[in-house]
Image (cartoon, rainbow, N blue to C red; front, side, top):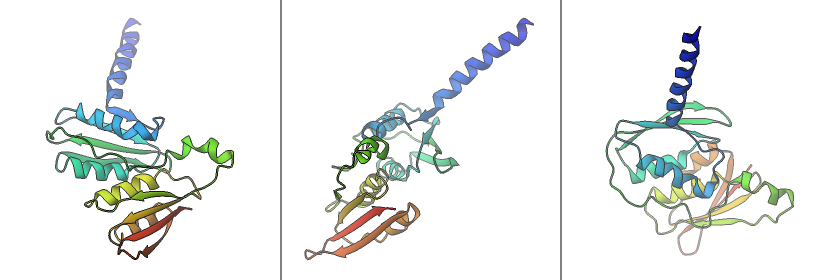
Length: 195
């Protein structure tokens, strides 16, 4: 009878080891979430992986990886449910050390961080992401980063050098209404609203 007890003990050890590959970021505040993910990535040996668990599709993070570490990672969706996404991120090659592309300046915090504000009837003012002067894909990355943390009914204004036609399909899949207007200086202002 002692053998089953030892087997259970070994099973617990195996489970604890397996959990090191799982990185659940759902409870991490948005302002530090990406920094912690990239820290996990920087510690990852070539050939190893971790499974990112998030409460929404981390597409903006994918664009950050693609811009910062082209060819050095693979991105595989394991679970795509309404409130849970799991992505297996594998390091395929070493990547140069360097600063990670920062989140957009003035980006809103997570909607779950603002629930108390909305409950208290906080005024809804449009947030602005100024992506002018940036090289692709950074404007799209910054706008999607801000969009993913918009609360229902909240608005965001995105300023770009050109009409963001590649952004529209991404917004449509996220249930975000959008209208774009060309400005007098030739730039574009796109107003986005979470439905």
